[in-house]
Amino acid sequence: TLTPSNTPTATDTPTDTLTPSNTPTYTPTFTDTATPSDTPTYTPTSTDTPTETETATATQTATETETPTETPTGTLDPSSTPTATGTVEAIIVDPAVTKAGSPEHAEVGEIVVFTIRVFNNGIQNATNVVVRDTKPAFLDIVSVTVVPAGPTVSIIGNTLIVDIGTLTPSDLYVITVETVVNSLGQAPGGYNRVRVNADVDDDPNNNTDRALLTINGSQLPATGFSPADRFSKSLPKRGQYKELGDLWLEIPKLDVSMDIVGVPLTSEGWDVTWLWDDAGYMENTTFPTWEGNTGIAAHTTLANGLPGPFAQLEDLRWGDKVIIHGWGFQYIYEVREVLYVQPDDLSVLEHDEYTWLTLITCTDYDPLGGEYKERVVVRAVLLEVRQDIPSTYSGW
Image (cartoon, rainbow, N blue to C red):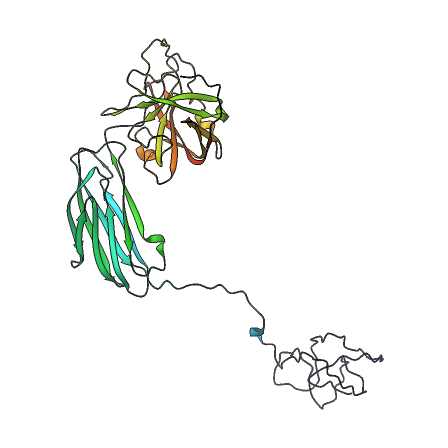
């Protein structure tokens, strides 16, 4: 039979034999002749040896064509099949820093030691590496030790600067900073942050760290009377609280609105006993609507035994609105989390770089102990500020 050439071509001549279609097909041809490989190849075989196997053949009419054809190679090359590959960028230079403090709770006059570790996760040297460690105002720096010795240390105000210079992949510098809590130390305390910078850094995600120091001496406010208590509304109200003008709080989902008054922080903490149906801005946290974390507390149970304005606070969910009205504007926050914490967990009042609102009330009343065992905490972030509209609220 006439065996196709290495470049099979399709013809339109009708024959009694099977004619290849216009698209070459890769049909394995098995012959009776011995071949060097046991694996059939997916190409037409060029050989002068007659075969007894019925194969797809071209007609005996020689046909010349200039139609471009795809000539299969003699073997199936796996590399000719495109494969999806991901590109992984090598981390060449990667200065990093970690920070921890001990103890994590302290009082005025107490020593707190911070340990900073600086290292290079990359495979090449980092150059002009500088560490900046900024302490809050309630901490005074007593001493600084760097191991191994060599880097230049300077202190400007409450910022410690350590100039390491070149940081190799095998280097580890440990910076020990001894501090003391000064007279400005008040609850809830706060973070102090460290940052490392270099000429080149292929992974900036590990350039900063922070350590929280909680100042002892206070708890989250106790915001509920016993459900069995029945006091008269003639009890003192607002006597020790500060008027904040036309500042008021609205929670549409709970259908509640209330004035916001200022609650001073004392050595006993925040006393919200006589808030009645108002909301108390917890002084020493960020002022309402400012950048940071604002603490606001209100009663879950009033002195007369009735539900307080935050009685259903735990019913709030992600995306629910909390609105502060003031100075002709609406400051619209959205809920991001609902937490249950212990009364001494002041971490929920930590300062934040964004504008957050932290709402606090009591829950889980213990009749035997005569106190609430937990606090409900709702955290909401400011998303929008708009012109206020005339309101029928008349709480002032």
